[in-house]
Amino acid sequence: MKELVEVIARSLVDNPDKVVVTETVEGDTTVLELAVAPEDMGKVIGKGGRIAKSIRTVVKAASSKGDKKVIVDIR
Image (cartoon, rainbow, N blue to C red):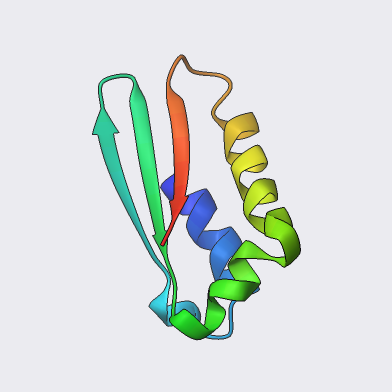
């Protein structure tokens, strides 16, 4: 999942080298923290949070095979 979020975020931003995804596993929940450059934050969140919601939807669909819950946190 970490690689999936990295690929999506790098394709959206102007500074792909500043995209950092940190994965933390807490029991049956995996938290993916996405950090981007401050000037790219709007591109990752999108108007009204549409792009952020889309990223979370794609990750949820990709993780639906397993029993783990995946949370994408954008910082």
